[in-house]
Every structure is written in C-alpha cells, then in structure tokens.
Image (cartoon, rainbow, N blue to C red; front, side):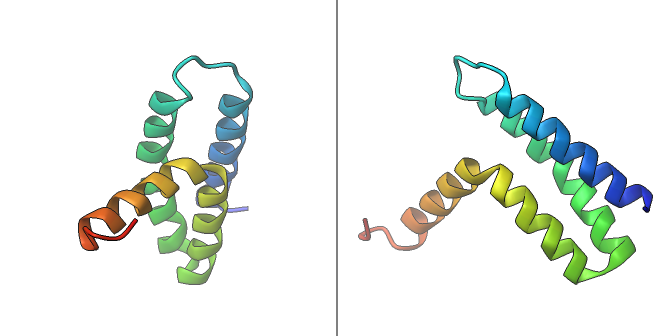
Length: 85
C-alpha cells in the first residue's frame, strides 16, 4: 500500500478513536484538527492515485465527519439562499 493510503487509513483510525472518547465539547476542537490534517492527506491521495480514489477517500472522511459537513452545508445554504429554511 502506498504512503498516502497508509496515512489515510491512520487518519481514519485516529478519527474513530477520537470519536469513541468522551468529550464535553462535542468533539469540536478534535474535528477541526482532523479536518486540518485530513485535507493535505486527501490531496496527497488524489495526487498519487487519481481523482476516483480521492473521491472514495473523501466519501469515507465525510462519513466520519458528517456533522461538521452538515453544518457547513447548512451555513452555505443560509448564505446563498437567505430566505430558505
């Protein structure tokens, strides 16, 4: 397995382990760190293996970090369509 896919698998394992730990702040700081570390890893995977593998890794990351993505989409929708609920 390549270095980029190994890093992506380690990122997924770390994200799962962090999600299992108890947190009083709903894991927000941890999610920000995971996003900051995950974006370069996603770029590296896409660079080494192409866009299709990059999309598969992106789908896996979105399934792990679904709430930050949900709130991002909600925020974008409020910015683009101010009257929509």
